[in-house]
Structures are given as structure tokens and as C-alpha cells.
Length: 194
Image 1 (cartoon, one colour):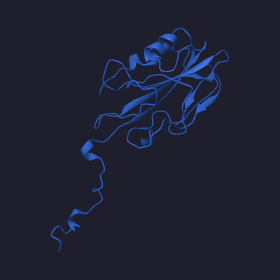
Image 2 (cartoon, helix red, strand yellow):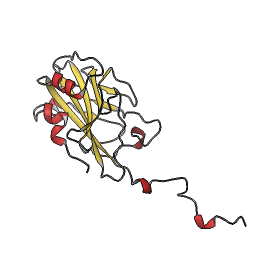
Image 3 (cartoon, helix red, strand yellow):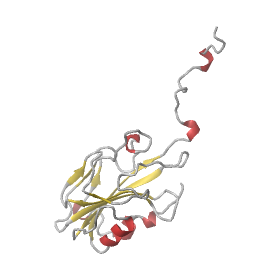
């Protein structure tokens, strides 16, 4: 893998064994199960790709807000590659529909306030995309466009429950990708015009 920054994931910084799954708090997706391959329709390999659908169970009753952070710990660098920062989610059982734009979005590692499409380097081993959901005991006062560091700083000491879901994605070597000539029987082509 290109890198391994699992110790820098938001979960490692903010969650504890006591908060993981507290009160039955769970994160799931209709598009993939834990550890499965992410469908290309949610990645840079599809033209009209969008964020996958996510669903979660009710957090503990004292939750005031939910935060979602999606990171790739296998990307090169000292920090995980941040694909999505979302906050302002209602503290109840809920969902984000496929492609839905959430209430507040921060800057991903590209510096954009949107879902950063997974695009691991061609030929890399599978990258893991870690969807991390946090229930906070206070609502955040962050404006949209905040950075990962600003969001994590605002969350410190306020996480009362957390949940995680991960998916993998890999791309074939660039020279192995399908092209329009892949299904053509080259021996059947008459190059001489006969």
C-alpha cells in the first residue's frame, strides 16, 4: 500500500473503545457491506460519480449533532487523505441518500467542500475508505468550509458515541484497463483493404 496512517484517522484521535458502537450506534450502507469493494459509481472511474448512501441507527439520547469524516489511510503522506467532512447532521436515526448534499461540508484534502472521489493510483493495492460517524454532546459552531484540523479540534472532548464502516477500492494498472479495442479480434481485420 502507498502509505499507512491509521493512527492518524479521526477515530484514533477522537474515539475510545467505550464510544465505539455505544448504545447500538451503527453505520451502514445499502451500497456495500463492511470491508467490501466500493462500486466504481462512487469513484473517479465513473463520469457522474456521487457519494454512496449511508444509514445510521439512533445515537445515545444526549447526542446534539452527528459528524461524518471519510478518510483513506493508505494514501501517501503523513495524514490520511480526507475525502469528506460533514457536520450538522440531526442526532437521530437517519441517512444520507446517494449523492445527497449534506447540511455543512468542510474542505477535503483537495481543498474543496464536496465528496472527493476515490482515485487510488493505478496499480496500488486496494485502498481502504473509512467512513467514521461521531455523535457529539454539543452542536458545532463551525462554518461550512472548515478544515479537517478545525473540525477535529472542535470535536475534541465532545464525542459520546462513534461508528465506523469501511470499503476498499483498487484500480487496475493503466495498461490493463479496458479500451475500445479489447473486444476486437485483431486477426480478423483486413489491413490491406482486401
